Length: 197
Image 1 (cartoon, rainbow, N blue to C red):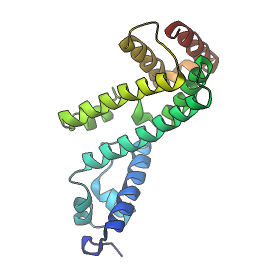
Image 2 (cartoon, rainbow, N blue to C red; image 1 turned 90 degrees about the vertical axis):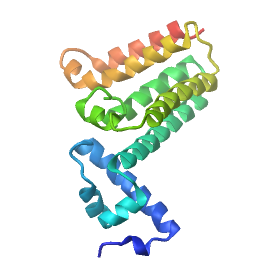
Image 3 (cartoon, helix red, strand yellow; image 1 turned 30 degrees about the vertical axis):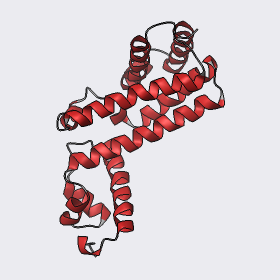
């Protein structure tokens, strides 16, 4: 039986939104933003279309909330990894772990893909700014928790690690002609040495 919006309690709404975000994350990895419809969300969540709109004003709002939740979870794990070993070595190991998290969630890094751009272009200026600011704040926190000092401007360091993590989109192709894992670890270790005092 499809759940109608008349039956929602505040607890139901919290649970249904969490379920929809979980479904959204799976769909985003498996098929992408453009190939996922509200009717599919409703089918998998066992709710009516009206119920969906009672929870989210649009498909984009659900995708945005899902992206924020996944990014927050990934960032939290990265910070926890750094706190275990607050040092250059700990930071390098945390970056390697972060890379594997990104690899399992392509929508976190493949921001130039047509599918991601279709989603991103429908966001408000405020939502776009929030995503950008959250990433910068997260990077500052990571450096602080690692108890490290930068040798270069913050923007340069942030850009270097962003570029490094973006190599996940080329991993499959590059792995055919080189030892990608070994090369990636080498780059991380050397960049950490060059970027931090």
